[in-house]
Amino acid sequence: MCEANVYLIDEKGEEKLFLESVDKILPEEENLILENIFGQRKIVKARIKEMELVNHRIVLQR
Amino acid sequence: MCEANVYLIDEKGEEKLFLESVDKILPEEENLILENIFGQRKIVKARIKEMELVNHRIVLQR
Image (tube, rainbow over all chains, first blue to last red; front, side, top):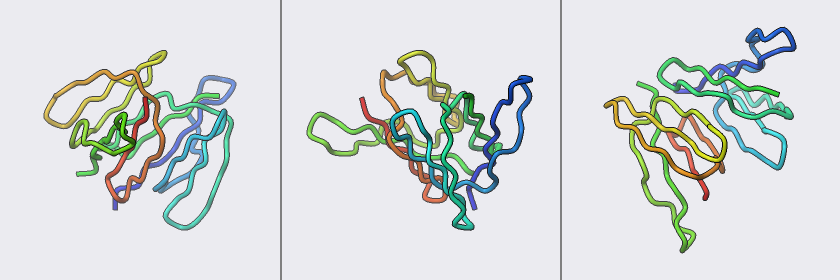
């Protein structure tokens, strides 16, 4: 499966796992709607900083 | 491998393949820098409309 782990950069500048095994990302105004393969959904006010799909890695920044 | 095909919505509202087998996406100001597993690089003034990683599908909109 080709889902990715989504990390959010916290106030200390460190990447923290925000949601694992994400399948869908839908930007909506200032938010990102994330949905993973287990049906979990999270909405976060952030933007995509970088994506490395082969490494299953997406980094978000507030 | 878990790269995705990137489609760009054209002026007719149709999705056209823009770059296949994309590994990395780096948003930079108004642009997206895309890099695929073959080392091809494309820069496009667009934003991400939706992503479906399990389907290897990312759609961009200008």
